[in-house]
Image (cartoon, rainbow, N blue to C red; front, side, top):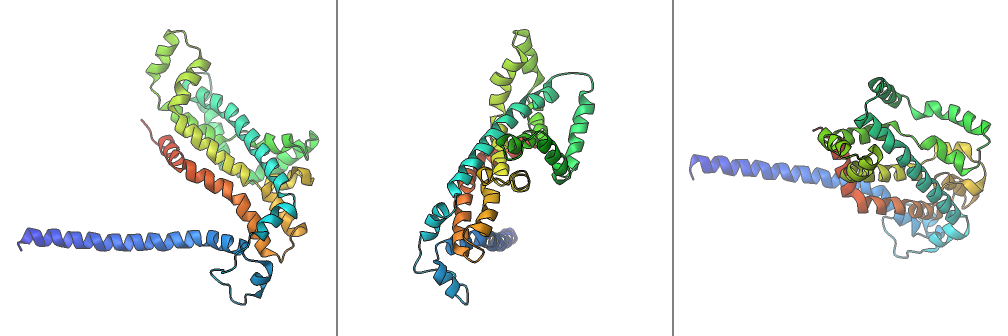
Length: 288
């Protein structure tokens, strides 16, 4: 074996060892991340009696039951919470897209006095934690008599500076020559936006839509603050109501079943559109 073969063989050995270390670490990390979900599903299929009889938590069960899932829909109005959350999520996401798409287009393509200053002020709002404006929003919605209404739930969530910025950067990557050519042909700004920019930026728009759906589905602080009528509870604050006045604090398997039911739509949504999410985020962060 000559010298070059020894060097090549040594390099392959080091690479193989490095791959083993990396994949071992990633496997352990994946187990750590997925274990809480496994434990949640496992607990949800244990009966109340068997769960309480375990002195040492068991990592599997030989007698799974679906009774907890039946209780999640019969003991408490979980279906109503689902419908409320669906209405809130779809309406908020749709209105937000109607607001941020023209705003991003204006900042990316139109020329008007003070555009850079206004955009800078918009970006500065990203440094303000959302918790700081909760009291202001609460006072405003209360003064408008919108507590315990879908309007009060939806209105504070229809504008996102981050999504405007992300979409604006995406729009800015489209060559100006397309816009000028369209204007020469007599195309209006709205038609150019609908026919050219939106199809090109579809991955980013899909990503924004999915992220907003997840954000609305997981929303907790604002719905908990602005609603005290159970008819307007969402699944997030409905879980707290279930824990306090539904199954009780000790019926952990039933609680886990409710959490599984609530989590499944988001998991399925992410698994279906995960490639679009990654593509949209990567596209939004690329210049040129």
